[in-house]
Length: 277
Length: 192
Picture 1 (cartoon, rainbow over the protein chains, first blue to last red):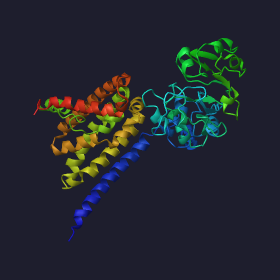
Picture 2: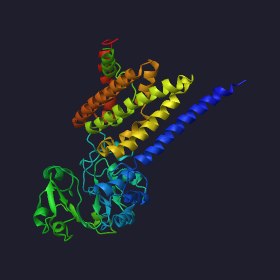
Picture 3: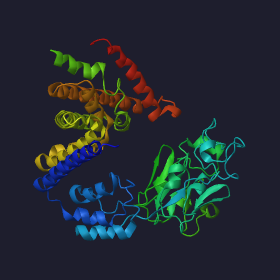
Picture 4: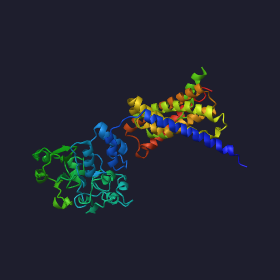
C-alpha cells in the first residue's frame, strides 16, 4: 500500500515553500515598487512584438525603453513602418520622422557583352558557392554581379529578377528589407533612397587601367563626375565614384560627362538602367 | 586556513567553467567583449553567493529534518528563481545604477547551471554554511576569471585577420575554450 504521508509531505512542503516565496515576491513587488513611465508600456503595446532586434535594441521592450529613456529615434522599427513611427511620435508628443524609403539596387552593369568572363562556372548554382572558387568569381571582375540569382531566391517579395544575366530589383515590389543586400557575396547590391535617380552603377575598387581590361562599363575613378557635379554630391574613394543621395539634385550633369557610362539615370518604374545608359 | 585553500581551490583547481564544465553557455555566449563579460561575471558572483546561502538554509533546515533530501533539485530551482526575482525587484528600487549595469544578465542567470551546480556541490560535499558561502564565492570568482580571460582572447582573435574563414567565430572560440581547459588542468594536484 502506498504510504499517504510519503506523498502528502513532499506536496505540502513544496507547496509551503512556493507559497512562502510567492508571498515574499508579492511583498517585494509592493515594497520595492518603482514607478515607470507609462509611455514605455504604451509604446510597447503598439510595437510589433517580433523582437527582431532590427532597431539595434534587445527586443521590443528594449526599444520602447530606449525611446522614452534614452532618446532613441522614433522611426527605427522597420517591421512597423510609417504607421508605427507616427504612432510612437504621437505618444511621445514629438514631430514624427518618417523612415526614409529605400529600395535595393545593383551596382553593376557588367553583363556578358561589356564584361569579360574568366571561366564557365559549373558548380552549385548559387552565387555564394561561385564566390568561393579561386579567383572569387567566374567573371574577370571580382566585384560585379555573378548572376546566379541567389538574391532572386531569397527575396520573399518576388522583387528580384535576372535581366540579361544581372540582378534587378523591381522598385514597385521591393520594400527595402535588405535581405538580398546581406546575401550577395560580392556586396554588389545596395539600398538606395527611393528619391535617388542618379547612381554609380559599378562596384569595382580597382585602378582605372585594370578596370578597363575586364569591363568597358566600369567606373575607372577618373573623377570627372566629382568635378562636374554642381551640388558636390559625387565623391571618388578607392577608385570608385559614389553619389550622396542627400545632396544629389538628379540634374544629370555627371551622367552626361561619364566616359564609361558607369553613372546612370535610374528612371522609376524602368529599373533596367543598362538599356538607358 | 582550510577556508583559504577551499577558496583558492574553487577558483583554480576546480574552476567551475574549465574543470567542471558548468555554465558553458554564457561562457561562449557573452564572451565577445570584455565589458559584457565583466557584467555577466559580477552578476554570477552576486547570485551564486546568495543562492548558495539560501539553498543551504532550505536544505539543512527544511529538507533534511523531514527526510525529503530527494526533492533538492526541484526546491533549489524554486529557491534560485524566487531569489533572483526578489533581488531584481529590490535592486531596481535600492540601487538603480547596479540594476542597470547588471541589466539583462540578472534574469538570464536564473537558469544558469553554474548557480545550481554550486548549490548541489555544496550539498554533496556536506559543507557548513560558511564553507558553502566561501566555495560559492570562489567558484563564481573563477567564473569571472575564466570568462574575462576568454573575452580578452576573443577580442584579439576578432581583430586577427589570419583566422581561416571556416574557423571564424564560434569554432575558434570552442578550440580556445578547449586549450584553456587543458591549461587549467595544470592546477590539478596543487591542492588536495
